[in-house]
Length: 517
Image (cartoon, rainbow, N blue to C red; front, side, top):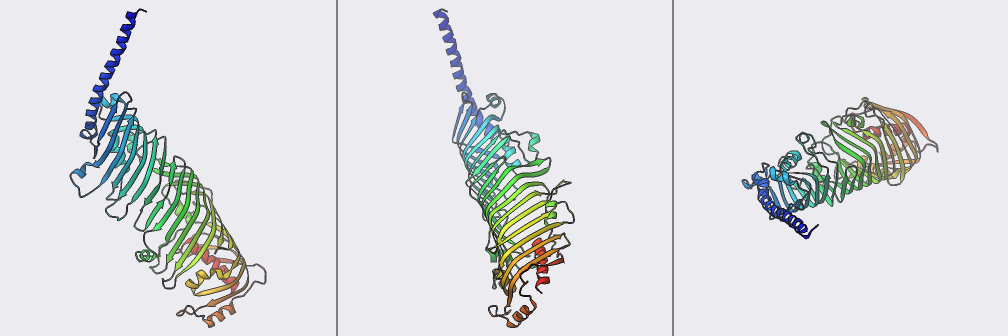
């Protein structure tokens, strides 16, 4: 091949490169001019978008924007009423853009969008914020991507009706891969489809209603697993304030949990039906307090048993195993604030529940089985085995338990403030085995105890003993069972206005009454 031919080839290559270079400059310039039109002038969403810096490279097929601001168009006319999304974003980088789609349409189509350090505030004036209508649908009109990578984000959802944020999330990192959005998908309950996702944040605050706040530290979520650290559910008011706002008796919950983990979980919609399935949920190191004041008016509505509560759930719930481990449960009940609350404590609390299901569109289910091992009032070993079937419309259940080596004076923390009575003696063993339903329970109760004594206190001077009533009580109560288990059978009717735990207690109390008196 001659030198002349080489020169022609070189000239041809240089010409092509020059044309590509010039074309790149011209297209870059045209696209830079066209992008503001796409983003705002031809943007028929409800949002206005501005930026300080915009770079386009057709050779690298990417768009880079810096210092982006997103506001609702309505805010430009009305600065008083805020509603929708307000965002400041450090950078946005769109990779692998489809150049021809960008030239011949008003939509940016690309492989990936990377969003760095967004600070987002959502004003939800009606407390019915719609992700489909306010986020997915509007921005799908501007850009269509397969993957979203968001890093170091902060989110707040505010309502003019609440003094605190509805939701606040710090340092969000979010990857959503394999996104698919169509008109058909937009009309579904979840307005997009995806192949995989990961979400993490450093902390989360959620204010679901006026009575409680939820908080967490680190949260990590993937498509199949969830890990939550230092979960808290805390009343928004002091006990006195909380009780003053109640129209009827209601439990006040304070829940602290060091770790919550979900393994092999799956959720979504089948048609219009929501489902949540999970192989294993573990709550580790729970510190739970349940407080009830008896000062508000009794709630006389029927209290359904757990069979019906699960049976009537309006979605498909399936949890193969639920574990609560290394935990503590405290129940307090208070007749009035001057006397103080009676306290029951369950330490070293471990629970395993299997086959937790809702009854939603199901015809056959295995029994729910719950096994509990703990220390009652800190020292006495207490075990419970409890089972029921969600689909049993009679709400049948079986429950058996055993309490050992219980010093009766430990219960004084409950009986003294609540019943104005103290006890002493040793309950060597307490056993119960009951079957029941929504109407009544029956079964066997057994106890062995030694040197059981009662002290009744004066009603108006609660520190002084009522010697007469104490004497009468100890005359009628058998002080021991002569070193042997004493058994009896019980049958009690349920008060439908009371909880399952009240039902269990009156069954135990009936057994104690028949043996002690």
